[in-house]
Length: 575
Image 1: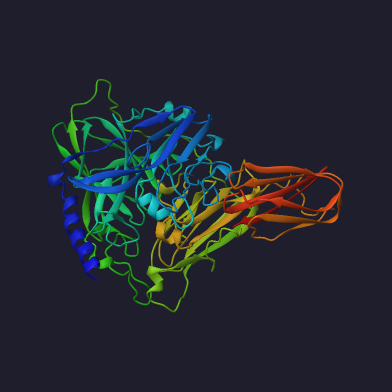
Image 2: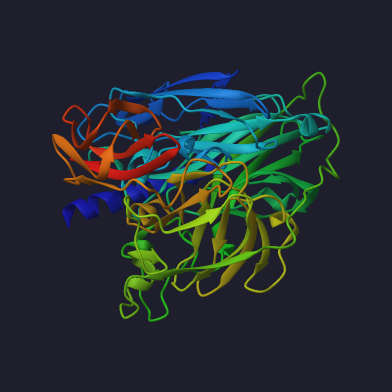
């Protein structure tokens, strides 16, 4: 109880940091990396969020957060991701949130990067211009690793966006704004899965200010928080225009005074600061206006009266607080002076052949606490590394209905593809949500429907994820997996003439293969979840074989046998 009091006391003190009359730290602008080959080093670090107080953090190519990666549509890129984290149990992953990439390159919980190793996915940038991000997606580790600092922005550029009159000089009139809240324990360490996230950070900076030019500027808003949603707006309800959502530009710029972003969501906005030299304007989260049920609103309570423990102790919940102070300075030599209107033409799919239902629900409907505090599941099951929840087929267009049967709003994220919203609880979709998305906030006891198409990539064995983007919900198992299967590919058949079994499974030092019939000649291959061949051999004229796997690290592998035109694959676990 004393530790709880200490954290609460620290939370109250940290709440004072959102008063922008005392904003005093220049906003950190992450450096950029561009080109087609990127070296990303995940490492330990130390960060002073407050003067004289050292907090252990994680970062990518630095102590906290990572560089902004700038890539071009159509380029082939290689991401060399090295895990140099110290401390036991610090394997990790890196997921390219929002990018359309092959399953083996997606960076979900199956693409594990062990400590001291490098993962080098190679893929083509197929996304249109937009703001994306990269972050860990390890099984049961996402919240801890993201909260401690492993995250970065990724910007895709293309020719269509380049033709528009928009601010696009990074760090001059085009700014990354990665918003996160954090909690600190009595040892000044970042606390995980606590409701006392009272330190508001932008790009890792507490009490930040930005010297912004008196011209049209662009802010790339990213909600990188573990749980908290933000209702962004500006001082005196100054209007702005939203030009892009999660996965790309809208058809037309939309005039707004508020934009609600849940964890994982992004929005690109443009703000006209002309004629305001010498003035100050604040980016604020108007959380007092958020509907109840959203994490960060005044109240989150279940149908039967349950609440989240310690939720009412957090002074940010239901309060309006500052996020970023903009000090308006003289314009640049060649400023953008016009606000955008029409942008690009999106082409949403209009018909589908498969409809799926996903129910977000508490593990027990009888517990009032469980309605809002979890644990939660999707369609009655929790994530299992060894389970594929369903398979779809390449080039299939599907409608997904996400029904929230809990007392808390859940941001639902799908990997691989973007989607277009069809309706929200049966009603119309607002203009600002009609573009490409990969996260949608589903309100309590409501539903959303969206349409998506599974294009370009198929893999029978390695899955993509769908999950709640409240990170402790994800870590607690509110996630599922699916594969995309190409029915036209040759060589992979579900019925084979040559049958075999492998045992024991799980295995420690050896696995044995027993064939139904004698094999005259075959090639045996063991592949890890990164798609890398870790062992291969040939066999001749045998019924059984014994393979030494003692040197393999623990994890999931695929055992492949190819005999002539026949091909078989089986999954096994190395303990």
